[in-house]
Image 1 (spheres, rainbow, N blue to C red):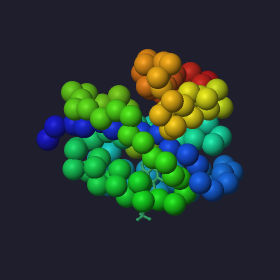
Image 2: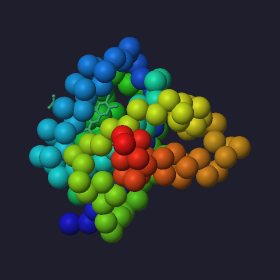
Image 3: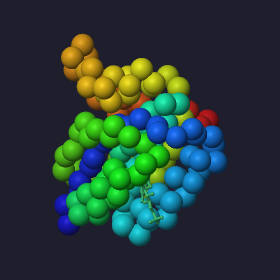
Length: 137
Ligand SMILES: Cc1cc2nc3c(=O)[nH]c(=O)nc-3n(C[C@H](O)[C@H](O)[C@H](O)COP(=O)(O)O)c2cc1C
């Protein structure tokens, strides 16, 4: 089955501490393993950015469930494409907390990307497995 990748941004709608983030991650990892979905979640303090990849049907079903989650709002899909190979093959959901991405992700959520057409690619590249692992070292 062909692989599909979705990249979305959203705004946190409830206060988050590490426990609240952990709850999302454990739900995500359990469901994603079941649905053959891999990806990365980034939280910058007030915003999320997430890459989901896997079989198209599973990714779309997951996205629609995530979109209805009241723990975040203003979800905006900024990239959706078929892929040949997974970027996060080893992660049911990698996680990155990057305060430095707050302004860029805020601009994507509010559609204020007129000044920087490369922003989606820039933010995505900060979420790549190499960058994530670098940040953990
Ligand atoms: C920012 C954010 C990211 C999420 N990412 C995922 C995800 O990757 N996979 C997933 O199954 N649920 C994810 N969720 C949780 C879903 O919205 C939903 O609560 C969950 O899938 C329900 O799972 P359950 O029916 O097993 O309780 C996310 C929620 C938020 C707020």
